Image (cartoon, rainbow, N blue to C red; front, side):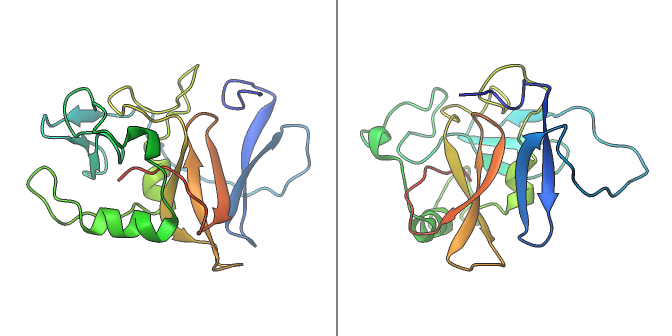
Length: 175
């Protein structure tokens, strides 16, 4: 498998018609849109010590451990760790019913929120801050594909992909 984030011959591109992001060779022909202004060059996260992680740039609070693992310092297996996959609808329900870090106001992140913790500067997988444990597979977002509402987006932290999949597929996810 090609590690597309560390292989410098590949690049991300966005398809606005399908609302999807893809990874292609830099030599492929794509359309161009320019931007001006500063970009954030670093990520900054704080482990709150209560099963949550704060993004110091966006102020979003993230669940530290994925479903099937205890929200403790090491994300220990709660006995369901080998079965931590979920359909999109089950992922939405899990997040809405989560009680963690003194909050019951949890939700499945949208595509932009989940992409915000993707770390493109790392040189090896998983491409996410080391505070986020067990983050190697695909993770659901709440974002529906506007071209086909049976599909939703997920982020695959092993390669940095943002992909569309059927909502009835079983994927692990993070909040």
